[in-house]
Length: 68
Image (cartoon, rainbow, N blue to C red; front, top):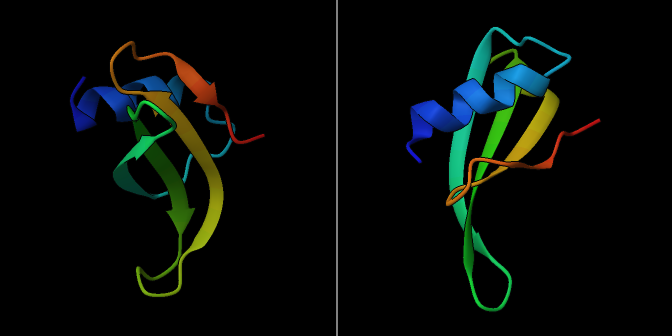
């Protein structure tokens, strides 16, 4: 799953539609499993006001946590 696909998946469950998006990739757990962390936010990049963060499983594209 690409970063753009993770954003699309996260938008399907996002309650807050922030004007900006920050995406990070993280391996979590044992054994490690890839997770996309997609944050929708407003404000300047150095001091963002994060409104919602959605975790997307990288291999399957399923929502791990919808940030609500």
